[in-house]
Each structure stands twice: as C-alpha cells, then as structure tokens.
Length: 295
Image 1 (cartoon, rainbow, N blue to C red):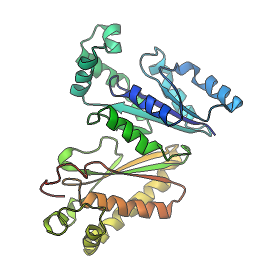
Image 2: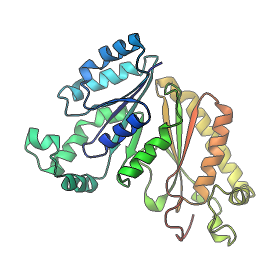
Image 3: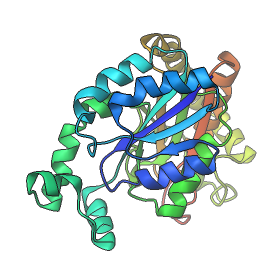
Image 4: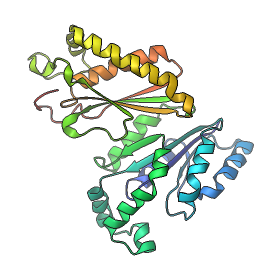
C-alpha cells in the first residue's frame, strides 16, 4: 500500500527541511510537485509497485495549486492509501527573520509586487481552504532546522501505515501558549498541583510518584472520567467523516506536572479501547523553565 505525505503551508515555514527529513526516513521525495499530475502519478507508481513511500511539497509556486488542491485532496482521502497533508506555518516575525537570513524572495513578492509582510499575510489568506483539509498542522516558530528534523523523526519514524487513524495528545503549559494544531483543549489546572509538594516539585508528570499523587484525589478521577468519555465519543464519531487525524491538547500552568500525567492516563485508555488507532504523545513544554512557578 502507498503511503503519501503532502507537505504544504506558508513559504518560509520549513517545507524544504521537512521534505529532506522524509527522504532520510526512506520516502521518495519530490519538491514543488504539480498538483494536476498527482492522480496520474499515483496510478503509475501503484501499477509499478516500485514506490511505497512518497513525500511531496506542493504550494503556491504551482499556479494551479490553490484551484486544484482542495478537490484533489478530498478525493485522495477516500482512496485506499495512507494519505496525510502536513500544513506548516510560523509566526510572521519568524518567517520575516528567516527570509532576511537567506536573502530570498517570497513567491508573492514577485507575482504581486507586495512587501514581505504583505506577501505572508496574503499567502495565509489564499491557503485557508488547504489548511482546513490538512491532517497535521505544525507551527515551526520555535524550531531550528535540527529541532524540526527531530520533531518529524519523532512523529513518523515508527509509523508504518498512514491509513490508520492517528490521535495526537499534546501536554502543554498555558504560560507558553496553546498548541495551534489542537482540535480540542482540556484544562488540567483544576487538579491539585504537584509543584507545591517538595518531594515532587523537581519531578515531571511522567514520574510514577507524581501520577500516584494526582490519582489520590477524587477530582482527578472525575476529571479523567469526563475527559476520557468525551474523547472516546469523539474517536467513535470523528473518523466516520474521512478524518484520520485528531489532535488533543491538555494544558496546565507550565506543562511539567499535571498535563504530562494526564496525557499518559488518556493515551493508555485510548490505546486499550481502540487498538487499531495509533496514539502519539507529545510533552511540548515539559523541560521548559524548570524553576517555573506552577505545573
């Protein structure tokens, strides 16, 4: 079976780095692939059986991309192949800095005589429909090249079959901002905070002592029951709509204690209930600001 990754998004957000990373993961990698040729190319490689993993970057450099991509992507989601669209973006000031460092021109600066900031804003507007069809959204603002490669390796190195539904559960700290890729957010700040227990302060939510502490409170058990029941309902219904990816964020103050523990609790329940679903756990802020006040 063919596993196909389409990498798209805002110019300057790291598409080239992600494509090269997939090449290192054994994918046949092609940059700036024309959207009008995608269906015929897929048919050709399926007949030859020579390629099983394919990664492509597709974006506004192709003049037909904005018009054709939405209908092509919708059709591919119904095909019996593993298919994911990764949409990359970054904060405007970060993209501007990257362009200034490389001294390159944004594609829309040449086409429409716009300033760099205007071109970035315009591109986001043009890509709205494509972004809505993406399986995975990744904000690369906080990544350098090496960290972005590591993130892709972490997410895809062990994945063999992209046709399986994937649930991503992200632990984060509200003080660092909510994860923009999350479809649903849960706030774990209602739970007792292990940060204020001296023997737990320097541990993380992945440690058994922290988990045991949280589970010793009735409110934690009630919280998990409500959250897990809702997620189970979501899983049972979400993937009926040709959606193979669901991202869930669990936040606490700093992302070090409560949210990582809750992510582990939820992931265990989902894996037991739905063994056919791949579960990917991410602890976005677990090592940030170890001496922060609150967890």
